[in-house]
Length: 324
Ligand code: ASP
Ligand code: MG
Image 1: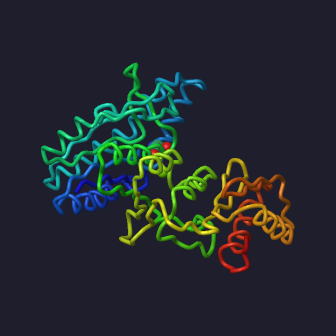
Image 2: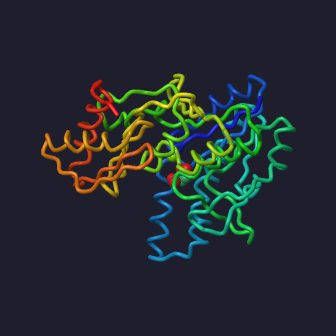
Image 3: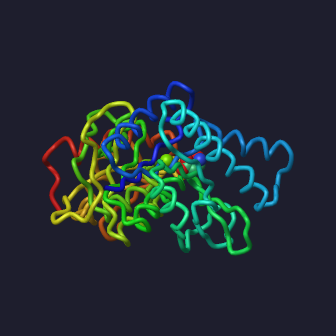
């Protein structure tokens, strides 16, 4: 059994958290299975590196910015390897390049084009836990590239597909996918499972739980992904192709655009009309609106985004009034 596990940056932010995550990895490895682990940069490292670059130049060369940003994930895998070694586990850390992750030359937003799994397979064959630095690869010019913010999720899904892994697990500080961000919206409900289509629309709408490219890759290659918590052992949410998609699935927002997206198979013009009416009852003006296939989007004033999320979540997810 081969498992790919990915841990987000806040899950490995300090020595204590690294130790906790090492425990989760060790448990899986002790079950006798092969484990490939993808890590993000610790805590706020990526933001700090970006501001380090900005303190030198307002327009750093993109190639050099990628070299700099790639160090965040490298430091995570090196430290995790030290922790696992201390626990007596056989492991090795690899950069994206060493892990055979090939990308196009689009620095800062590179796309994975191919994965040469030879090195990883060799290390797994030698009985090692393989720790791969997320969010990075190497271009055909042999330059380090990065995959865009949140890109470690895509590293994990792409590796799971390339290695034909039996299981792909993405750990973060939330224990799954909710009808809305449970840290921001009251009464948000966790889902047992979500379809690729709905998750893709939520990711494109601004949900930070999964990098949208990772969802597209999972859908393309049919990789089932388990969204789990690094802190509580709860069942989490399964991302897969579902037989029945719900009429209404989730709501998210893009903070920068003050745009709210309501997602679900049955979402359409009727949903939009109900949403606009519910908001206007609370004196919130909808500035612009659009409906697409399984999604409707509304833009409001920035200060209205969070109250609007509450109102709409209540309207569509906490009452049974919704109809197509
Ligand atoms: N460290 C990168 C970021 O903060 C990639 C990732 O976390 O997935 O965007
Ligand atoms: Mg993330």
